[in-house]
Length: 547
Image (cartoon, rainbow, N blue to C red; front, side):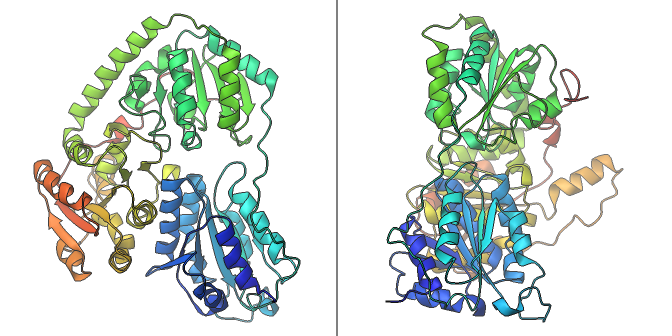
């Protein structure tokens, strides 16, 4: 029986392990959804109220599971509505497939003014993803889909795009293999000389520190073992949180790392470009740098390392452990210094940012260790990078360097949909909430058990604070009129409650997190201490790299 491109796309997704498709159907992808109709048992469509909701849900599901996720939207405005989610997936190494339709083939590049026509849509998609291609006809459909599946699982992860003109969906697919599962490309072979050089540097270090990023999320065991072997504290800013659990004595946050930074003689970057340490805190000739990353472009991004290893951490870290040998130098004095610095820095930060720590402490007390926490660009969200304990990989979801205001609610919705086995909690401000709060309809329709706390200060609080403190109080375009979020939740058929103190919040959370229904908790929020001086610290060491 002849198979259409649409049917082939559906079967390829299923064969490669996709269970859900976050989507918003439209006229240019009708043939695809017609093919999906008969396979809904294997690939469930999860339709949203806006294209950005579909893309953010795929993002959240990918970050929470570490597995590729997909969304499908119409071209032009449909694709552009997903752009912020795709750029966030790029920033956070999230394997998200964008399956995007296109105007009819004959009109591409002609400027006819076809419905949803976008000049050079494929060019737009290429710039938002790590790999993008168009299926031009039935002859190349299988190959394009296979390359997309391979790209999702190979090298540094990130978003991938496939564009399909609306007339091509119904074309007959040709040259289709019986096996639709696409293999991953083999990772780079670790350089044994570089491994040996790095091992020698690590063995000679007296005060080592490890910096982990999002690229280390699947290497928790190896990273923890290396840290213990070297007596090296491990710091993560945002994306690497949870790689080493917060209750491990060598797990530290950035305030502690900053306090220790002038004494560090060797830093090991694992799946992190170490941007804060190298470009903000500073380096000098006394600091040795070992950098391991699967993306060769990131090695030496801020200056050449002493030893660079282009490899997957899963391949490099066991080799490095073997090369270190059986014994290490006595670093008990360094561990004692780390312990003192950790206690001092954490106490000082908690005192300075006590209101935010109070709310975060209430959340942490009720959210189980395996629960997923999704931050946002809000006052408690910023402080969570410093003062929220994380105990498992992939349980602290963040927009990373993209800092995507408004991403949080819909992203958390995707995480909650994909991880129904654990509680998922989202914190948002009233400003960011309204970017995707319409997806409460999606939460209600699909009965997704997401708990959301809305901190309501009737402002873009961070913007207003900066205007007040740095621009002589010239507040402009940052104060908001926000809804009653309890009533708003109720209008969607979602449970809404209000808590005015951390003590009031805890029983609300206890009930919400044990429920199989979505819940919105509104928290009236006033002025709190400014967190940014504790996040972006001044240079403390050396000169600007390359300067």
